Amino acid sequence: MKSYRKELSFNVPTRRAFINITPQVEEALRASGIQEGLCLVNPMHITASIFINDDEHGLHQDYDKWLEGLAPHEPVSQYLHNRTGEDNADAHLKRQVLGREVVVAVTEGRLDFGTWEQIFYGEFDGRRKKRVLVKIIGE
Image (tube, rainbow, N blue to C red; front, side, top):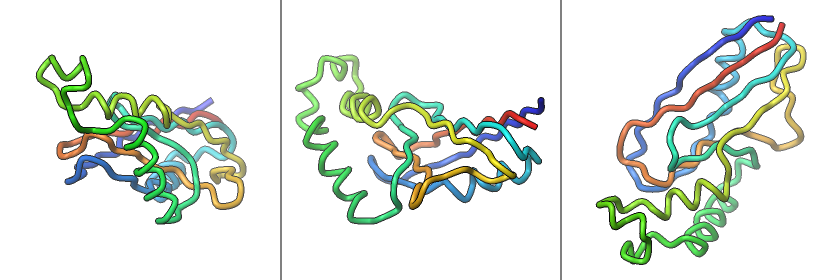
């Protein structure tokens, strides 16, 4: 069995954003040469998420509005975590809702998606460099 590891880097200029990273993951899969296996994608930060859904702008706006309703950024004083000097407690909660990682089957050298599925990086505490791990194992 082979394994392949690639790190993607992002520097999102806003606090929150959703970025379609499917092309970068597909590029890593091509570089790996793996035809059958599994592809794991996870953010290497506790205030970001990786998830699979449709690449539709209205849906992304709905996500942002819904997540902000569940865990509003302000007032930052509402969160005990922020007493440490941070202002990102809401980002930790938003990450918990959308999840840490995804695993996608690799079949015949391609990500084995359902209709409309794409991989997204969800950033909830941006404005600095962040990393995403792509780990592919298989034959």
